Amino acid sequence: MFQGRRSEAREKNAHLPVAVDSLDAVVLSHAHIDHAGRLPFLVREGYTGRIWSTPATRDLCAIMLADSAHIQEKDATFLSRREKEFVEPLYGLRHAVHTIELMTGVPYDTPFEPMPGVRATFVEAGHILGSASVVLDCTEDGVTRRLVFSGDVGRAGLPIIRDPAPPGGAHVVIMESTYGNRDHEPVEGARARLAEIIRTTAARGGRILIPAFAVGRTQEIIYELHVLTREKAIPAIPVYIDSPLAIDATSVFEMHPDLFDFSEDLVQRVSELFQFVPVTYTRDVQASKALNGAHGPMIIIAASGMMEAGRILHHLAHSAPDPRNTVLIVGFQAEHTLGRRVVERQPMLKIFGDEVPLRAQVEIIDGYSAHADRTELTSWLERVRATSPGLERVHLVHGEPPAQGALMESLTAKGYQIDAPPPGAVRTL
Image (cartoon, rainbow, N blue to C red; front, side):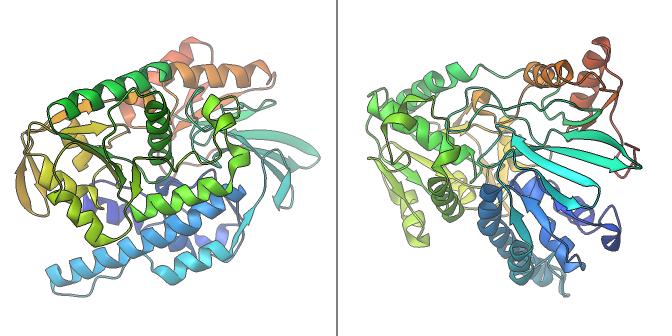
């Protein structure tokens, strides 16, 4: 699903790149909305085949696609009133429910056959809970060739999630390139910076707003706050998880403890990673609104991660004008989103149609990024190549042109045959 300028995103989302009746199966890498968000639209358009994923991805999709359907319906109602004519939602709740009915969960490292002649296997991508790189062994006329799709590649050392496990034996690789032109802060330094920002903001009496994706980033930040609280590295100020979707997603995390990284000390020692004082989960709307009238330092974690919708908008409208407060960015902010405008520290923000001054401090920690940076992407691909003597070509996807171009240049210099196919392009395996 595309995000950004409303009209452009809607136009892109309403057109599928292939005919529905040409699809034999869908194999899904993970549950983030940019990957899974149009599945109910595919179903609305007539798709009735299976959708394959890991069990955790299926469980996360059950809550995320229902939430997305609710947003689609609300947006359509809003646009219908504004345009004074009926605007059809991209899909509705019934399509989201039917999508989940079509999903089949397969554990990691367990081959399955999505269609005759194709054997698929999910391997750990280290991006979010249940995320996978996909290995496709395709056999035709007695010849088998292996396609490896990276999915979204994660980073070694992220909280909770296990490290990526690059597959081998590839003939062709399709790899993401989100951060192909830059490196992140080290994962190891992110926790210390988080603690410093919290201490500094609390000392001046401000609140810390953390816009976070409901799945993955929210749970990582809760985990980090749990560690810092136990270490007494931050003051004992209230922490509010103000997102019903994030609360539901946290419940899904608690259903899959077998996928956690058991090399981490807290995972070994604590059974309830996401339940500790002073964390409060606020599902109720009135409880959320009451936070704007509360006094004193606090931490509020709310969706959406790019500040395009959700409760974070209300908190931002209330807190952005106060220089005591901090807006803490812990995730990627796409072009043309409110989050990108905050990162750019634009002096005025448009929220709910009103101009809101941005006087709060803006801090960015990219050490929590769940995407591999250019060094980590290159390392992942090098590990694939080391066990893939027949590797012929790499196709870059999932990245803005500057990132793709920079990564393509650096990988070409390392001897890879590489391209970045435009949307809708067809390549032969």
